[in-house]
Length: 399
Image: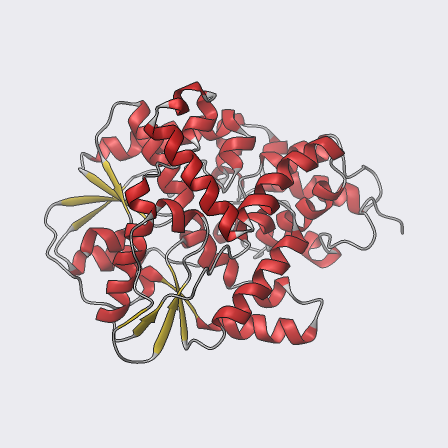
């Protein structure tokens, strides 16, 4: 039977698609469905669209591209699914197909940021310096509102914050410094290194560790994602533990074996590295200081849904004496979704404002956020509402 998928590229498989029984239990958990109320904005609707392409009844262009673009890939549907549908795998494969069939001018613009900048450490740093200069001169006010809401705050002092190459004693644990984390969240790296030492590791910072490939994978740029995965494997496979302080990155690195499945040797090496990955909030490190009062907790989607991480953040805060406060929104996505806030600004802004209001309603002076995209989105939307709630990584709060 002929299908609408482009030959030679990964695509949603027959078995994965057929694991969905169309029960609809995922619908109330999907952030885009909750905003629009449209079946095509739900996991069930998107899987139905994938089946239509699989059966040769629809092309992998036009409306199908729109359906996949609107998905945040937050994977909130997965824990709610009684059939254990691997929706994250389905949507990433579908995006590989839509990206390959996107008009050339659109694809060039999208790839420039993901492959041309984020995928190269020096260009990422250069972009950081440029953004820091623009923000210092207040030129960012000339940017469209949706780009301002998606932009991290970057300072020259923060970018120059030194990181020790090696500190502490014990088994070797390497820190992924990454891309956005390395230019906008270096204080989180310092706090993470301190936690690694307190947990009994020799904390090592590899030179120019660079991007893990998560942004490329989410955007359907599979070859770029594989290239970056191989780079990180070569660089970090000697470590006994690989510590990652970005929820999206730790979730992605744990899929390296699957990502590189087209090459048995690399698949084995990818699986071995994936087994060594620890999200920073999984470190059983004693707190570095006493913290009193309430701390709101935003559970990043790639913690809560992709990795089953949630209690760890609460445990980290309670160990320091803080009182964690849930947001009462059922862990709804904040709307960041990697570069989603740039590509789908309307939906991202709606979800970002909802999240910011949920945080303000707790009355807590600080919110714990363990993913850079979420931190950027939440901080900018809190600012837009005139709130002074501080946004911090959980390890920053207890360091």
